[in-house]
Length: 222
Image 1: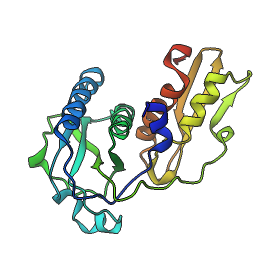
Image 2 (image 1 turned 45 degrees about the vertical axis):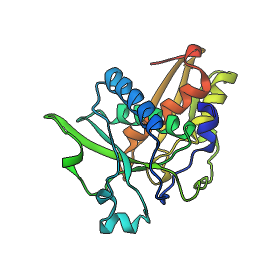
Image 3 (image 1 turned 135 degrees about the horizontal axis):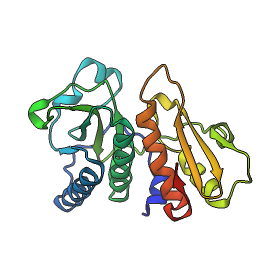
């Protein structure tokens, strides 16, 4: 499975099988985590065989079951967009490796003995990982035109990117983002106002999906 195929195939999964992640897959994930941390100045950590973060009342309300593995998205305060961008990079890699995933914000019970948070950092969210009891379902898609601002014709690479952008997971499927095509090769990405929050983190997820489908060689971010 390619990353482009993973964007289409991947849906949020909240219920997981009691099946351990294979050592080779763990190794591949940890290698990519190290690269993401180095590039983004983040402190993402893979937590394995830890069921307690997903046992509280709020998590039960979210209908989670069988979650024992997750990415602790630890990063400097204010790094929300980077957390989304690099988290989605890991989520799509996990999908290509046969794993399912789910972004989770305030529902999770913190387990600080299983990951490290340095001064100036915080746990922004977690991402559940594992072998899903199902493959999840696709939310209804809004027309891509609702998220576009442009005064010039849209090139094919932009349309491909937008098709992937609207598939990006966002908090409560709010999709509070806008992409503006400034000229043939320059793009601006903005988070719209959100009462729910998480819009900046969501924007990072959207930007990574867009890059995968559009091709980074075709444009640059403003």
